[in-house]
Amino acid sequence: MNNISTIDINNDKKRKKSKVKKEKEKGKETKPNKSKINMLIKKINGISIEKNEKKENEDINNNKLEYNENPIDEYEEEIMKNLFREETKNRPIYSQFPGSTDNGVNKLNLTYMKRFSFINLFISFQQELCLKQETLYLTINIFDRYIQKLNFKRIISSDINLIAITCLFIAAKYEEIYAPYLKEILRIFKPNYFNREIYLQEEQILSALNFELLTIYPISFLKKFCLYNINDLDKKEKDDMELCYYGAQFFMEICLIEPKFCELKPSMQAAMCLYLARKFLLFKNSNGKVWNFDLTFRTNYSEISIKKNIKYALRTIKNFFGNTFTKNYMSLPLYRKYCGFDYLRVAAKLKLIINDEER
Image (cartoon, rainbow, N blue to C red; front, side, top):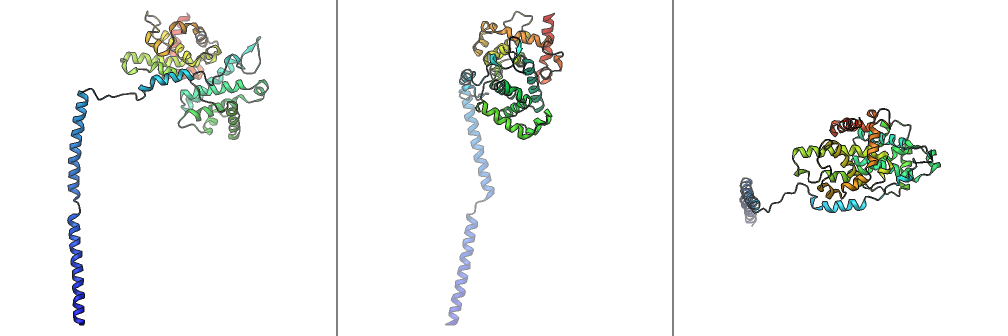
């Protein structure tokens, strides 16, 4: 019996081993071959690529394939309507600006020339920190609105330089993707301020403005007026449009000193400066139309409506080049900025044109 039992046990072990071998062999046979799979994938992909190419060719032949270079073109009309609708929000009243004079006596120790020096300071900051144009305009907007909120006693007792630095710090955090660190701003300005002073001033400014920073800038309209359908223009027209675009930017920053100009709507400021840039740079000695129907349609302003208020801008620009604002305008950051090759040296070109006109 013992021998029989041992034989049965041995037989059972052999059967189990044979089953395991058979299962392994079956498993090996059922395992997919990687090389075969790769070949199948290549064949399938080749077929799908050929089918897609055929479909694309059919779509091209049937004019069904549409390529839009600007993905927001279909919303362009709505964007422009929104810009025109929101352009009057959160803007200072320049007729009540503290730097204005009553009976020849300056109420506050902040004249227009002092404000112009701060604008040049902001421009030098912008150049040093490589900030956007929108950041520059928001800085000036916050500065003007906060100064207007303060009364006489608080202006005299407060530090205007501290307010200017803080306005730039707020605008950079609002507009820039990668805002500069506060230590970078303090390093450039080199004042004897601590971080805590900036943060406290930031809280005061934002509280005074009710945290309402959203505003529409003239540069936003200028971009829409100049860069609309620019791909449809030939090379010469593109170069002329780019030159006028930078010239209009230069005029807008010069005219920031003039309250009558700043009281105009941002869209009107942009249209007016574009008109002057086209007049001086393109049609100074020609009989061509400075303002055509296409520009009237895009800007919503006719040539007659622009000429009604253009005297304020012209006077400010001529005073700038006539050294009325400063003994040497070439030393100002505003002039040096637009003499750079990034702006096609438009300031130097306009200097020659305007000075020749004055002679």
